[in-house]
Length: 133
Image 1 (tube, rainbow, N blue to C red):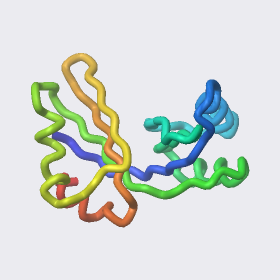
Image 2 (image 1 turned 90 degrees about the horizontal axis):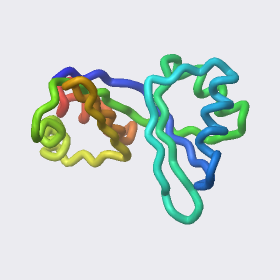
Image 3 (image 1 turned 90 degrees about the vertical axis):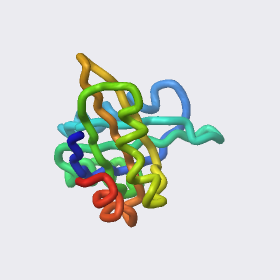
């Protein structure tokens, strides 16, 4: 397993068609290049998006200019060979350390998996130790 610590910013958007596209379009217009993102419904007509940009300062500036509050989080990109139970095994350290995730996503392509796990910024160092980052 390979683990890379990354900067993540979470923002709230309306949970309606086109909201995510609009957010990503504004970022593209400011040349913000993303490593990845996770978006999900938070209920009550609101959605949350956790974004990781190659240049976190550019993302922060874009959010500020757009009047969007971005909360700093810590993310981890975990990758390795796909096999049954690999995500459970890779997350065991976080579970054993009592660290909850804020968001997560994973996918498999050509026999390799990539997983993004986001934790609260305050848990970043402990999560890094638990994951061996």
